[in-house]
Image (cartoon, helix red, strand yellow):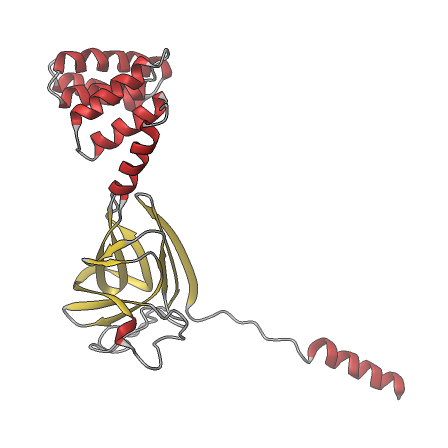
Length: 280
């Protein structure tokens, strides 16, 4: 009898406190995106339509929504940004929304510790509200998705997609201010060829001062004995942009020759296309 009791006790201790594990109906998801020099992180749960009508039914129009499932959806960014036209300090915020048939309001909320919507909504905790159009799209999104699209060096769209609905909030990041500060710091302390090259590339790509870009790229190339085809390519484009086509053609031919030696088909084609465009 004693042995039977000990066996029963052992069974209870082994299994009595075990917890059944099953998958969540709305799976947890996270994503990280760098826009310019600013890092964004998003954490949310992703409900699925499952043959249900979503907006206007499962998610009522005109009422605030947690913009996901389970714990409140979170977004974090490393720099001050402009969210839907409003300046927001760097930090972590909850995302809420109010869907309507033709437009949405998307809120950034400073209280991030809620299961879904806050029990008491406090307007003073709303740090930004973006009012954006609701787009009806042909593609059906079964599982609610958040992502970034239309990414440039300083802008992007924060996207929400579910069912046949797409909503995009425009975002701006302080890339130019950070790059200019970095250029000023580096250029004041014995810059190397690659520093001049990167500064020239940024000024050219963002259509800033092309003459300054020319000065920097020429300085970079003068410091290098072995001139890579991709740097020669940029130098030729910058010279062409300043109106010096003869110099641009000479540089493109050097880049073409170096690209052929390296076997880089992409740069071979790009240089040939430019030479044809410039009448060489």
